Amino acid sequence: MRRFILHVIRVVGLIVIFFPAITAALAVAVVDRNFPKAGVAALIAAAAFGTALYADRQLRVLRARQEKHFAKVAAQWSGNQLIAGLRWFRWSWVTTLAVLFLLGGILIVQKPGLDAKPLLIGIGLLVLGTSATLVLLRLGWGAMRAGYVLRLGPEGVHHCLWPEIAWRDVGGVHVKTELPSYRGAELTPQHFLVLALSCAAADALRRSLASRLLNVLSGNIVERQLRIPCVLIKTSPELLFGAARSLLRRDSGFELD
Image (cartoon, rainbow, N blue to C red):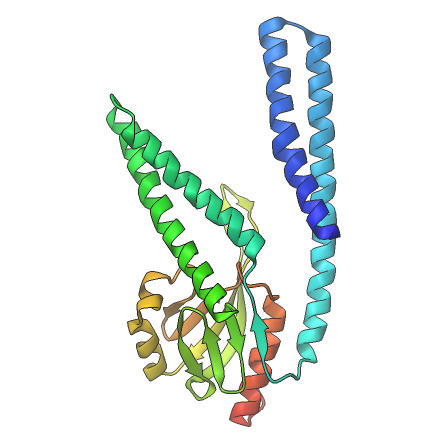
């Protein structure tokens, strides 16, 4: 509950208050030359920005504690199966964003008398929004029908969008973390559960419909390594790795590094 409240504070402070307040401050200062009102708006914007930064810092502290706890739990994991559901809240706002891209593209394309550049932008938004919406809806439907996104059991790895992978076809498992950046600024780390597959398993999965069309969110194969994105999976990457490593060790009978 505390995490959810901090998320709301961060979003409200940064988007709902900060940007309108700073816009109002600039408008009052430039247009009306009413500097006292502009100062009040600027103070509101500064307070909102500070509140959002405080909420963000608290979220980082909670995330660090949670990752430490998950790492400890993962090291001691000894169950028979791990069922990982979908992050429905995150899925919903990402889906909403995709639908907005779709609607924006439709509005721009349908507007008469457009120049070539806005028309191309509208077509791009239309294609991007349609593709993202279909991918997200398919993932949501698959998770709702199966009851999970990813299930790690004694017999193998089950995903709601592609066939089961037996542990005998898995040669190793690890977590890969990528730090995407934009113009030098690091963005949120992206985690992937990576499974090293046998040639037969990799070829069979590559031929499946889901792995061809929905590889962005369900997983993609690079040189016989299956990379499963953890962004929409409601289980920490550390716990997924701990469970996969334990089950693979149990199935193979060998200790894994």
